[in-house]
Every structure is written in structure tokens, then in C-alpha cells.
Length: 165
Image 1: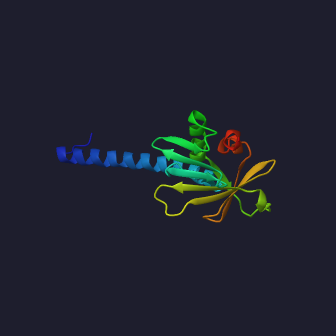
Image 2: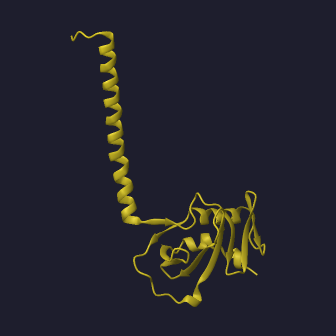
């Protein structure tokens, strides 16, 4: 066995612990950074609103307005309320679409225009939705970017009750 003083053994222990910490950090970065980078490059998912942003009001074609009142929501006209309205707004908060490389050819007269007032933002977020048979196309007018989502999300973002007369 190696004869070292008490200070020498302390130095050995410190160096071994630091090496162990560096080993854990290096393997952790390899494990998680490679998964995140391949996922980000293959999907390029972009959040509609983002979980960190707080929606204050949502206006659909200047016909339906949904506004935040504390932790709850109120729709004007009141065609939807309670849990259904809360679930709709949660869908808006959590939905994301895949970025499109090229702008699709759409008939602009069939768009559903949505304006979202976000807390802390000077201008509202303006989105135009186009529903096709296979997918939901979204044009973010603020960033001039096209997104594509599964058509099934249309019913979550725009429940039929909102447009009921």
C-alpha cells in the first residue's frame, strides 16, 4: 500500500471525486444531448402559443371572444363554458405544429383568423387556420411562418359549441 500523509490522501480523494463527477457529466451530456438534437432536427415542432406564455384574450374572426378572468375563462357569446372552455384553452396552450419548408397553396377566403393577446407582448399574435381533409395548416402572420398539424386538433382548438347560435 502507498504511504501518504493525511493531506496526501485528502488530495487523492478530492481528485478521484472530481474525476467521477466529470465522468457522470460527460455521459449525461452524451445521453441527453444526442436525443434532443435528433428530435429537434427531424420534427422542428413549434408551439402555437407556448406553455410559458399567458393568453389574455382569444378572438376568432372577430365573432367569438374568449377572455381570461383570474384562473378561469369567459366566452362572448357564452356558447361554451366551464370544463369544455378550460380544455379548449389548454389545447391552445399546449399545441404545436411542424414547420413547413414551402408555403402551401390555399384559398385565403376560407381562413379562420385568430388573434391572441399574450401577457407581456405589445402586439397580438395573429394566426390564420386552413382546414384541409388531411391536415390543419396555420399561417403565423407575426413570424410569417407556416405550420402543419393533424386535422384532429381542429376539433380541440375550435369545438363546435363555440360557433353554435
